[in-house]
Length: 108
Image 1 (cartoon, rainbow, N blue to C red):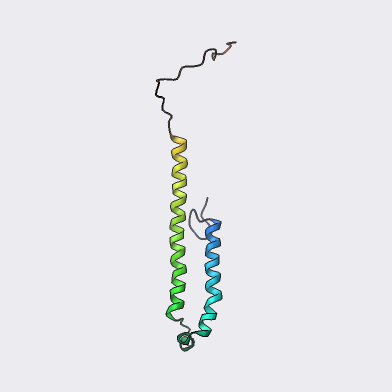
Image 2: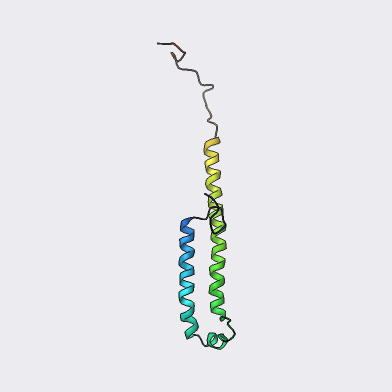
């Protein structure tokens, strides 16, 4: 897995889909909220959202950071497990392995 548009090694298509849902909800709900929010109506002239909108935006940004860190950790765990699987040296409890009888070249 390589770095994606999110800029994080391990960021998956599922991560991006979840972020897409959160952003979609934010983008579609904020205008509804601002239309019905008295504080947003007062601050609309200045272009600033109310504290609830700001908290929602910050929540999505914080989720993205946490998800990126978690995805990176998951990917590193997978790489560690793969490395341990392929570098593990088998241990024999009965001493060295003897060749099978007849395994010499030319044996019948």
